[in-house]
Image 1 (cartoon, rainbow, N blue to C red):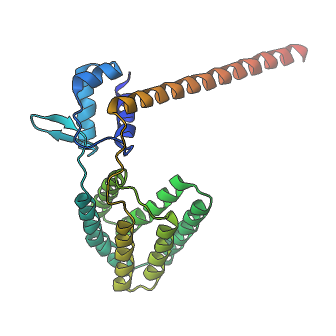
Image 2 (image 1 turned 30 degrees about the vertical axis):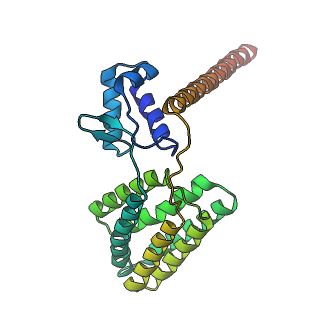
Image 3 (image 1 turned 180 degrees about the vertical axis):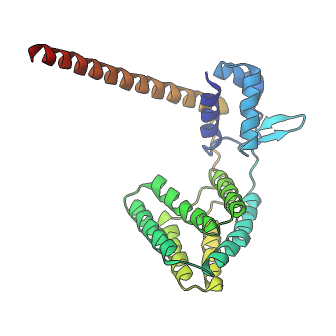
Length: 256
């Protein structure tokens, strides 16, 4: 199996929210499971560790993250400090173009919520935070926030929100309204209120379920194989269609 495919499968497994904490990820066992060398498996695990999807512990190897609810409280405390500063800087020199773009995005988010398009609603909601960071025109600020948002996303795999996406969508609208006032303090309060409310909607207990690591991996490997078979089938259909068109074109030329 290709190294990139193994990485893709392991990301899905580790982001599933179904893996128990502090489980050892043995190189040899996983290399056999994926039918790759230990060196390649080690590279995958090191990459996942760099991406903060697992812990690389000296003398203990790779292990799944042992999340604690205190971790997510710390993340949101950091985001209130950081994003509160971001929106104050943006509100101080907000322009109509940014506001119009955010309002249009918020309407799309609401439509996604109302049509139960959860994935799109989450994407659009996250885009507001990233867009505000980009509006500072500071690359370090943008990259730092993206890292924070990614860490939040990983934590939410374990402490999934119990509240409705509709609440977050409404709060995003309130942030935009506060931004339009041009008052940095008002804008900061709206952003911090939103982040605090998200925190209150989280489950205090992790969503770990009794699903074994091997079972999850095997399920994802099978899913990958199905995807490859479906993709191969589509390519064959396209080739047949193209061949049919060529034969038809040749026949037309002979009849011309």
